[in-house]
Amino acid sequence: MTHDELLDRVYWHWRYVQGQDGLQALTDYRRTILAVVRLHRPEEQDHKQYEKCWNCNLLYPCPTIQAIEAELK
Image (cartoon, rainbow, N blue to C red):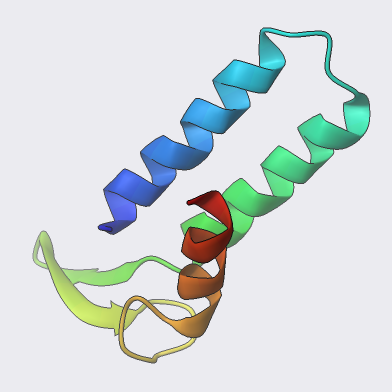
């Protein structure tokens, strides 16, 4: 899953629950997950994405992104 695909997946979950009578805790949860996904993005130089996480400097997808992907499947 690419970084953009993962962001789309998080946004999809956000829109789905937001359209229902969800709890405030779910809104806070979604914002937290989205912030983490935005921090752990592929490094970009000259508008090209590299295989390295911007935040932790490990190969992308880093363990953080892998854990989030596993929970969204």
